[in-house]
Image 1 (tube, helix red, strand yellow):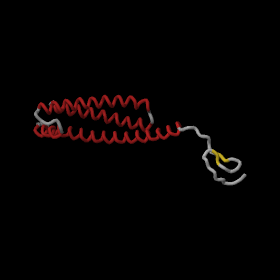
Image 2 (cartoon, helix red, strand yellow):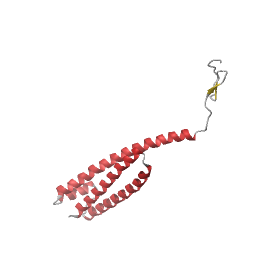
Image 3 (cartoon, rainbow, N blue to C red):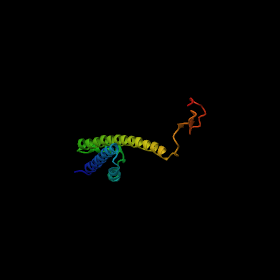
Length: 154
């Protein structure tokens, strides 16, 4: 197996793990499972670290080959490789899976934002100063809102 094929397979495996964790994260967010979400955050960070390490190894490989450490350099190497069709397939799958991960991450962020906003609203209500409920006096005036308008007499 060529070094590039090994690196692309490793990158695809790392991306697949991130995708799996993002899907689990979505499930936990929707179900309100705070216990599992904290473990998923740690697992997701580890998977991202693995992906970064594989990406760094890929960049070093391309640099050793005298190519730029970007998509263009990777494409140039793939074009001249004997197993170019297989390598191109890996590159395209990685790109597609990364796009899907980005979409999952965006959706999870939207769920988190809704949850954060709801929590913030609840905290404002819970932490606001206690106020006696408004009620009518025997004179027909409301108490506790400063109203001076009479709505009727009892």
